[in-house]
Image (cartoon, rainbow, N blue to C red; front, side, top):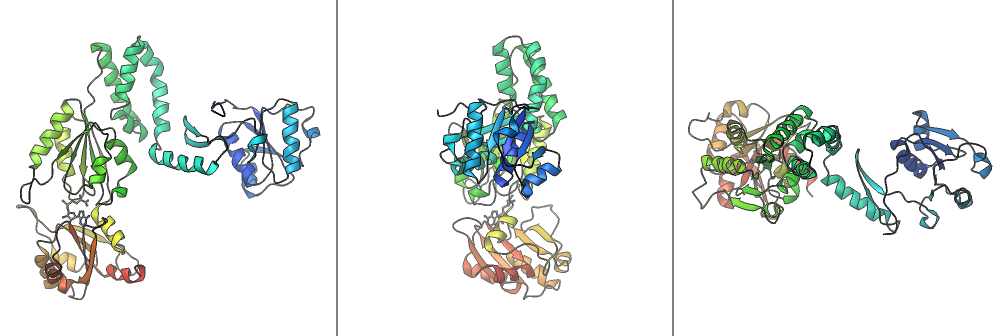
Length: 463
Ligand SMILES: C[S@@+](CC[C@H](N)C(=O)[O-])C[C@H]1O[C@@H](n2cnc3c(N)ncnc32)[C@H](O)[C@@H]1O
């Protein structure tokens, strides 16, 4: 290890920045965030540093650095020099060496007693990344990856944990009991509630679990279910939150439309259960899937229920959620990119556009017995972009329904098969030709049918 990573408390400590440019301002920003009392020595300030000055975050000594400026006054605890003038940087360095003040000269590791890492800031959680000054760009890339992995709300989570630390210590005197309690809590729904700022709900979980360990000596089984939208096909369209919860699941239930790459992203030891169509005709009954989720969660397992697209858009997610509520099983719903959004973007046209359409309707083209029929009359006169899910089998009915209510046969229509995947097919046609195009092109599900003038925008966007 080239450097010892330590976190230093510099609140209200005098710290000095030499230089008034953009780099100096970025360094000053770190001192400011850590609560230091920052002085800047520079003959002039560029816009970024002026911003700090105008907000009262720094004091400014409008001079070129010389050792005499610091004589007599309180010595700074840490100094950063970030000027274009090598002579000034050298002077700062030598002054600090002579007075044993840790110094950092920007971009010159040979003149640094300390270096500033790339930081992922979820204060009070802070992650520092250093390449020992060898490649700040690599450190920044790693930072970007970590930024994506660590939820924004982890600061609030840490804050809440800190507030209960003393109470837990009093309630659970042995380190083993505390360890078991915290480990269990941090793998439960508590984490997401706290990170989302749903503090009361998070505190409630914490208190129930604490009571459980106090009275039984055992942590509560943390069975819960995550209803995760896995997006329309391209595995990269999964959300960060979906991925994080998937990776903490013990069991993964997935169906036909979920990309195999996403199922692969679960932990290696997680059990994977396919609950999609068993063959061409027989789907696992919805009731059996719900029962399986309940049974697994009641065994204390964390269950990721992966669904194509978004769980709440033609995904029966709400039915599953209702069953979980009935059985008092904690659950999280993670929205996904629905097929309409993903497929239209990948096919090269928007769903709304100021010139063509101000609204979108998502419609199921496949009604179950007892469900309301589609109101083609309303749709035909709405001006909406219409997106039909599960519409391939009923394409003729859709086409006739809209045309009988006056929608022009010339209205643009798009058929998107296996949208967002490497096998995506996009066929642009008209409403009048929709059914015959589906037949002649042998379109197979999953496919989306889109009807509306907005499809014309594709000509401008796809060359
Ligand atoms: C049961 S619905 C599920 C919808 C999903 N919950 C969503 O939000 O996208 C299945 C229908 O979604 C559409 N669909 C899903 N993924 C698709 C894809 N990659 N390409 C085209 N259509 C897709 C098809 O119409 C398919 O029949």
